Image 1 (cartoon, chains in turn orange, yellow):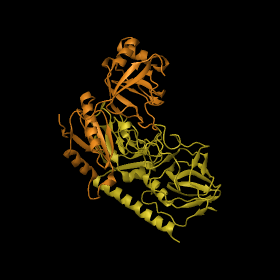
Image 2: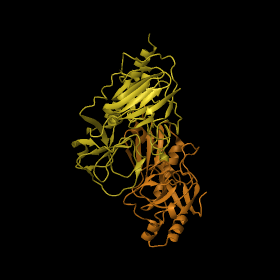
Image 3: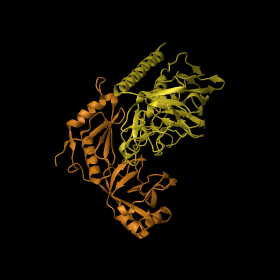
Length: 229
Length: 318
């Protein structure tokens, strides 16, 4: 389907950014639309564009205030530009999602909350592993910390409330479940999600050519491993 | 040449103009919390306005200069000394090899900026020398300075003795350190109960404020639309309202996304005021339009441009 003009809410986010809102719920189709629009804007590459920040159902555009003449309101000018482009539509033709496989050692010292998640779901720990590793996930957005992926596609039976009191230290590579979401902690630090396993994949290395292992919109699979490299 | 960190101070980090273009990866801006003092300190020593400097928090470091250096300290009023000599702020200072610069407590304000001519030699990571504390990269190993660290600078062998310039840059009006700071705020996405609660109340800066956000104490507010909501992008300056009703003004180290109601945005021209607030300080917020915000920001940029010209004239003069 050919892209069309945006007919959605656009509002300022401070002086240097606009927020485009596509919905107010976590939804795979809405998130795909966010990534498709982000791709189209990135492809157009206007010189005043500093950053495109996707979220679950919204997208922020950060602009270079000083790139606009002092007679113009930079956000109004950006808003007009956005309304003139054919940006909206599904992701057909915009991209082919990458598939990234992440080996995970589930349970034991690497997954201290695996049993609690199983108990909450009323299933065995083996079932938790099977269902988590069977999921076809999409990176809805990266946030919280550099390279931390918020993944869509968790089997709803595995949804579990966050810890009442977050841990002060979660190991790098820890795979967690928080509510209906799952994700991976890129580096050691505090965290409130239930930890069910760990990967040795390096999710974020700022010195790497592509710092983040995962990019917004990528597809992800977890592979249950017997040992980590 | 190098500068040895003899004592690190309360919380000293390397910061420049900040990191752009990586928010989609969850990488925030970082950068100097007080962009104005950061820029003036750099201009005073002939650096580009966004060069890396040391950001000092509440109490400064003790530094030994292995070679001569030209420096400037701007922002908070700090007790800075070389031996028994007081080192005043907002002006160029020359230090000879072997000088030990002791930066004590901030008497007014919370953050001082120490610029060194030629800039600190810090490898840039993702386009910036700024310390990203959450990601653990940038600056010195992605962390605050520690005693024993060595910083590399250009050095200036021509300096024979301590020299304090007899001229300075007038720091006003950003640095009046009024008993109650006034910070202007643009309307946010969410309304509150009471409707003008953010503006009607006086707030106090909570002790757990940091580079990520200024946490406020005062009469609790509520967002009109409460309850769970999905994360959306946020930005430095965003005023968040968590369920406890105490607003948080996000600063340069703000995370990229947040799920709390957003009840306003502190304008850029007033970020220096925010950066200089100390725990316990009082602050009021005033509503502001985008036009007023843009005008205040342009005036500040023009002031910096005038300072750059004035400093250049001084430096190239007889």
